[in-house]
Amino acid sequence: MYLPQQFADKNLVYARELMRSHPFASLISNDEEGLPFVTHVPLHLVESDSQPWRLLGHCAKANPHWRHLEVRPKAVVTFLGPHGYLSPKVYPDLARVPSWNYLAVHLTVEARVIHEAHEKDALLKALIGDHEPPYAQQWRDLGSEFADKMLGGIVAFELTSTQVQCKLKLNQHRPEAFEAMLNAYDAGDEQAKALAQWMRRLKAAAQE
Image (cartoon, rainbow, N blue to C red; front, top):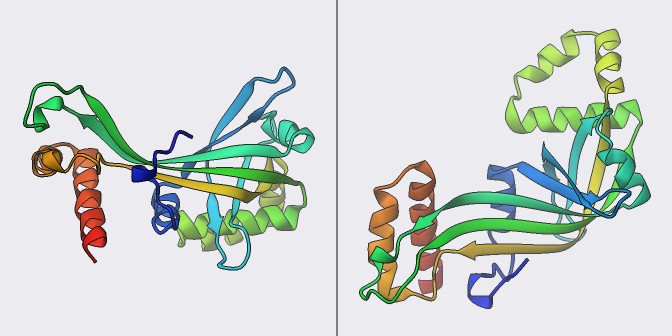
């Protein structure tokens, strides 16, 4: 993605947090015609300080995306964090234009398609652990016949990262508008308030 240096999370300090707090990602690869094929899917992050990050997910067996990944395993995954409109009214002069602020993580990945039932079951339990841990007992209690039927209806995948980019676009290069922008976001909706929190956080980090 286009990533000016002033917006780059150079040491990926915040990328992991954004991926965990906004796990509903876009998985993008090419179909047989060379066009982008997109599946929107929750992903589980497996992180390591010594190994590439991995993402685990699955799609319906009827979704052709897994077949595309088997043939062309290189793909892109995007995560979108808080985002919102920015009015030019926050600036002290009129020679400004509207903008949109946002936080995003992009990963280039190599996909491994998973058909084995035990690996798919482990993946589902990881996702359950992320989103509703108490459901794990219900899943176990449903029995092996039901589980096998459900597992047969999905195909899983492991996505190993080869590049990670994290963009924190909060108009950091416009300090003259910081307070007015912060006040505007504080008075906005949930997304805007989240951007205000990130503005304070990045400012505090820059002052350390």
